[in-house]
Length: 419
Figure (cartoon, helix red, strand yellow):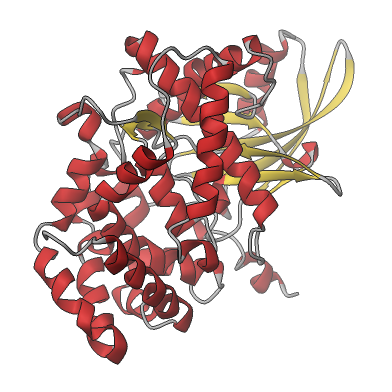
């Protein structure tokens, strides 16, 4: 493989670390973290932390730090996460957002408490990597222990299998269960987590978001056996984004007395998960908590249908996996001593189906991106920034076949009634 081909695997803005990311910076952090004022960094190696398509909402570097202290010589692999500094689409979308404050709150406040609640009930599930440093000023930075040397890896270049999906939904169910308990017993504990994707400064004006439905309608019009669905989506074109925003912000703006609410992950796709498999599947670790916020329970579940599951699960809107999730949700709620009304299968599916505009947003805007990226047909940064390339994702056979099955399911479930 040539050097240019190798570099092409990574995001361009992660090929060159910022000038402040140096041995002096890392040394100051390690001296404080290790409580070792004499610690000295002897070597620092920096490389991109992720492959193209793994993420978009941050810049990440993998560092290997060699250092010496009174305890001897040591090596520590770390992940450094920060905000984009290069001018362009990514910086415009993410600047002046609440993402880093949200993620810091999750690592330092919420997830440790979630783990404590689970441990008290006899469940030792691990919910996050160790964060050794965080700051918002003078720059937004988080530093974590690298999970890769601990045996975790991201699944790329192959479909996720059923055992892996079940492990993911089991972990999500535990997370959601603890959040339900805390919302019921200590609602103020999570009150600061109110910012989702629609709170990004340019989200609802970004062409990637605003042109998705129109491109979807064009695809329907150009596909003879799907053309019958075109009038349904033309009917909602002018207001479906507003309806989607209302669905996602319901907890804070229009809370329903009989709905299920959770602290959602908010970006629940395969590249935000790392699996530990040593011949036997051991664990999955969720990462990237920048969009965690209080929402109806269907938000992570609906997102997972389009961004995590494979086409065979999507065709039934994830029926078996979501029922598996519910079994684990109820089991965990019982284990941790939840005293409220337990979720039921019938009610959970009513919740999922009532968020139909979110389904319309996912199928029309995010699913073509995910199909293109997972199939290695197109690159994420091109899809987000280039309208002509984005239109190509709607023409992929994999995507059109997916849509064909999903729309038949929508019709069966009555999603097109009362638009």
